[in-house]
Image (tube, rainbow, N blue to C red; front, side, top):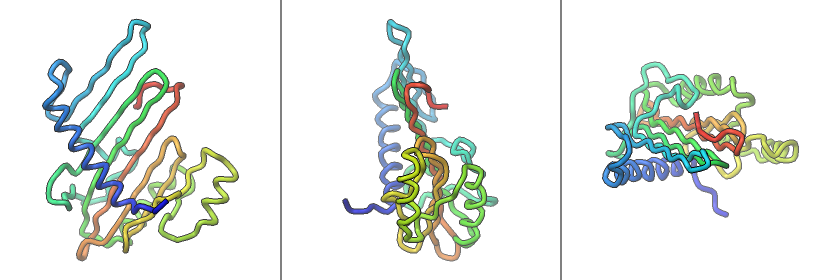
Length: 199
C-alpha cells in the first residue's frame, strides 16, 4: 500500500467536509441549523440516539491544543474554510474530527517546538518524519491501543507529530511557507459503544 502524505489527507478531509457542509445546507430543511453548519439528532422508538454534526467552524480548544501565538487562519488552497468539524454517532459507535489550517510568520522549527511541548500532555510525542519504523513496530507489539505513525508522514520539507491513543489522536503538521509556516491541527476521536456521543 502506497504511503500518503499527511498534508494530502488533511486537504482531502477539508474538501470533503466543505462539500458536506454545502450539501447539508442545501438539503436539510427540517433540522435546526445556522450559518455554522448542521446538527441533527434522531431518537429511535427504543430511546437510542443517532446524529450528525457538520460545521465549517472549529477552535483549537476543540482540538485539545493551544493556538500558536499570533497564528491566523490559512486558506492556502485559495478557497474553502480554514476550519472544519464533523461528528457522527449511533447506538454502537461515535466519530469526531476537528481540523484547523493556520499560518504563522514564525519559522517551522519554532512552531514545531511549541506543538511538541503542547502535545506532551497527551503522552509520548511521535515524530512521524524521523523515518524510524523501529518505534512504531515496538508500540504495535506492546499494545494494540498505542498510537503509531503507521502510514502517516509529513509533506516533503515538513514535520508531523502525533500524541494520544488510537481512539483519541492529536496531530500537528508543520511546513514552510516563504519565511513563515503553515500548520494543521487535527483531532480524531473514534469511540466504541461505551460512549455514544462525541464530546
